[in-house]
Length: 215
Image (tube, rainbow, N blue to C red; front, side):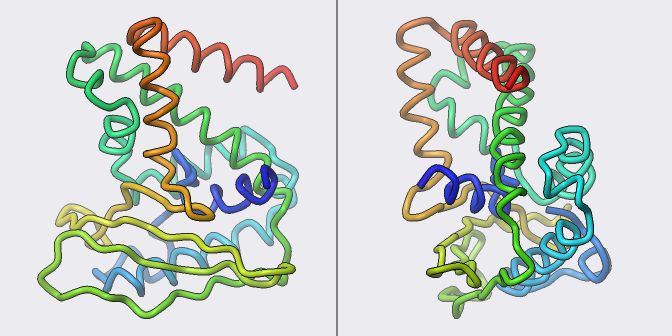
């Protein structure tokens, strides 16, 4: 279950923290798209990038960091994701604390991506299910499946309309194997905040990231 969760988090956050998670590459930078078209094109582009880069498939953190910064974060409302994961404590945090929370959350998601990338195979493909939404909707859910393994892996995205995005949409949550990523982290983060406060959560995330880096 853990390895599968890592694999799917790359295509969602990537994030994802996010991982998660996605870039405006090729046709994505030129025109706004319907949300399901955006997810299909994005997924295909990311799969193609990973297939062609052995360092990414090997979990090279430096390569992953560049991929996240240049190809993924432009399509994620990362502040909204982090704020939702932190919950009510976000409004009580100082701007500096909010900045640190985003940095540590991003690193946490990247560690998930590093495990996910080694799972990517050339046989994998993304199938986007029919979209259930209206043209006037400002928020939608796009449901997909990752196929090519022993069984399809469900992966859903929550998107918001974003006029300043080249695609017209930004991702703010992911559902991996039936678990919404932000909601899952909110439960964990809430426990840390209740026990240790915002600084305690930052310290816990920082230590976890440092520990992961030493592995």
